[in-house]
Image (cartoon, rainbow, N blue to C red; front, side, top):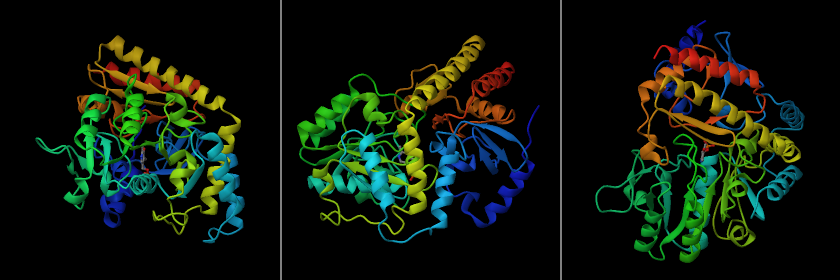
Length: 430
Ligand SMILES: *Cc1c(COP(=O)(O)O)cnc(C)c1O
């Protein structure tokens, strides 16, 4: 059995004429794995139905949002009902208060939440708020952590003696890059050093508390706690980017699973139930600085959109009422982890599997993957063969070694076992 994707390829050819690179977000283009992207016609539960007539087991869940599976009925129904009442007003609705109240009850350490339209917007606004609150310009971010595509985050390590970063995309100015200081994930000493060299200049440290954008990387014992102390000692805010982890790892996200308190928390993905939503939240003292209460400006014509809020509310209500989802998902992820691990170990293939809750990643390297540099030691040729071998067998993994799998609760143990069997077939020929 080997799937072919002829219609997808022809749709991609047509798309490339009218859309840059044929896609509206680069990772979809398969640049990291080669070949043409797969076109989706519809999706239900754990399965994607492609334009080629194939059913695929989905391990990306739209990069996180579809934690309960595709076309989850309470969410779909909520959106249909809301649509009939009008799709946007640009005026307040009660729905916005309902979802804000629920977010505040689920997320630790926050009094208020502001809705936006993407994770990018949430992180961009969180940093502006941190700067406005502290009156400082510089931020610390970690190599390999992704916080959306706003200028301050598109930064790579600077050269030589400089501690600030340099732009890693044309269009980002050197001036902007100089305010972003780059650190290595899981290297607390380096963070301390950066604070030392930039006394009273750091507005915030922003981090993925469980990283998911260099594969899945878990913070080592004491790392987040240490940053928390450094922030407190230096009057800086600690920003948790929970766009991936929020409402995925636990009701209270990574703050709950790590026990570390953040000052500003950004959300996205799950919070929108599959519609374009982001959010940032903090305690009152910080949120008081945000317009229209305070001077830090932030706005959005479609922010708090009634369709998006209906989808998000239905999603969060279900998760809030059924916290066992998080436990079940973690067990399913562990099952998949153990299955793949056993196959790769038996075959003697160098690998590291990282996992946290319903996020995991397979790295083809013999080194522990703890930061961007070690993630980059993965053998990409093996990853490509692994990805395409599974795609040929009806299993859809993230098309890049630097992305995490996101499991959804519609996956059955039979799906997971089918996946492990497919892995066995793929690597049997290596
Ligand atoms: C996806 C993601 C973002 C960006 O969210 P968009 O909705 O794609 O703009 C920011 N931070 C993290 C951790 C993410 O995973």
